[in-house]
Length: 302
Image 1 (cartoon, one colour):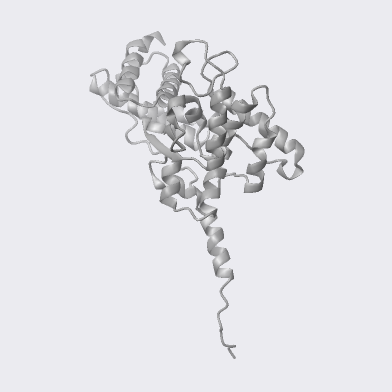
Image 2 (cartoon, helix red, strand yellow):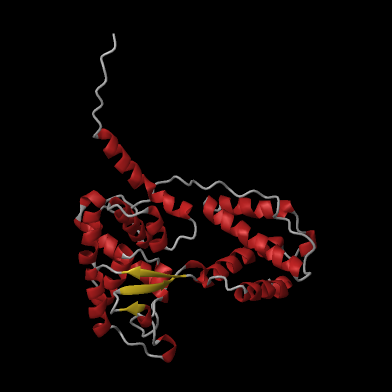
């Protein structure tokens, strides 16, 4: 990897300067390093379209889906764009490579409202108050795991009962909280674990080690909660549940209660409404119900 040390550094500095999300920077850098490793020291000006296609094919052979494969392609494409800008490469071999088709109409896995309400009662941990609030913010405010991690205490405005959330692309959105969730956060403010160093003093959620909570810990909290929930209810056996499914459930519940698709888009922090449209299966159910109520008076044809 030393062969491309300057190129990798240039790529990382470019992403930092353009204020790419930290998660994107990390993902793209890792994807790129895997590609460069396969090049085995080959000069960038000799890298061909076929070299890139071989790598993307290997990514799929290792079991990755179309979405991950496309992310790798995007990372490599951006890398060569940066290399050309700084005259470290003379061409971009990715320009003619088509992206893999991603299934867009797949119905998201979600929990019905009755199960969503049972989630908070299934939390059983040493730090109950913290973990219940974390699950509640995913289930009833639609926060991503990464957004939970980034929350600071001053992002919560108790007077207005709202939460400022820093989402993908470093974009802020503001979520008015349900009364019950606002009360829960007010209580949590009195029992919050205190950080051990100034670096994390503003973090809303602190780990048992006194540091800002990690993404893995948030996922673990959700996983343990789902294991307990599925252990109590046979109906949930065999359903693959994760922290992100709480966000799916939040969006589905909003639409079932008549929320406008644009409102759901804003609450979820989707840049493109087409991303939000995966939840329109709920609207399809509403249309089916509405049509079932029609009683047309059709004459009997002879």
